[in-house]
Image (cartoon, rainbow, N blue to C red; front, side, top):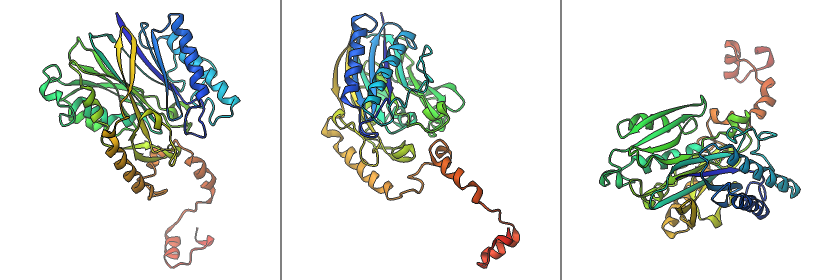
Length: 383
């Protein structure tokens, strides 16, 4: 029997501001998913938050992109958003970009990571959820997990992993996807994913057909869907572990380096990705720093055995300390790049409104004006 794991998330209201999900919204989500479990639509579920994002982890047998599962998630988010409005929470329903459900939540605002597979005799599942960043934030750690032997020893010493993995990479601007093979096409992979704002890893597949899919990452870009800044995308990721796939420790090792990602305050700044336990999944300093949580489960006939809060470990204390050093350093740049995002990325923030206000105050500078300018004698007559 094939099991489907669906992780669907949305920001339906922050408490306060963009900090956290209110307990009442988590309660509503649990009630809705418990009802669906009793009705037999889903096998199991786990509700949690990553910063101000409500996360719905569900297992079932209906395959990916199933309309009933997506409708369950949508209706849950709508009900939670209604409560958020009653509580006057910030940005209530901000990720729900449509008035009504249309059969699939993709393109409607929520982020989605799903995978379908035959459950192995032992099936470890690692769940990641990030806040105040974009889907490309997973590019570097996913590459290290599935293609870097300095991170993942199994690529060298495990015969089932020795052939490498297949990377499915999405161009989020063009809406196209390409499959590249590691290690043969490693440099081509890096040429793309080194531009995480555009090229995003969507799926990883084992070259062993008995294993199949290894990882799934949400690639929804809210600004590209809405055509304007409505919040950062806050991606999620599912990774299967062990038995021909990277070990749990190899997966987590990739997050021991707090690499710089786009997002943070107003979705407009670079900052270090901070791995934190669930209890610290609240974004405070400068609405951040961008952070990520990790939960570990064992699957048993679709049942979620867990979770284990994997970043709740002093082994990541040094990473957190280093991340805060990086945060201090880059924050001192204030509104300057490279702390502030590049011009291309800023096109989808609120900066265009500032530029629109100033558009009529620009003056063209001709040859005579340039001379007068250099002499400190520029007047309107030189335009």
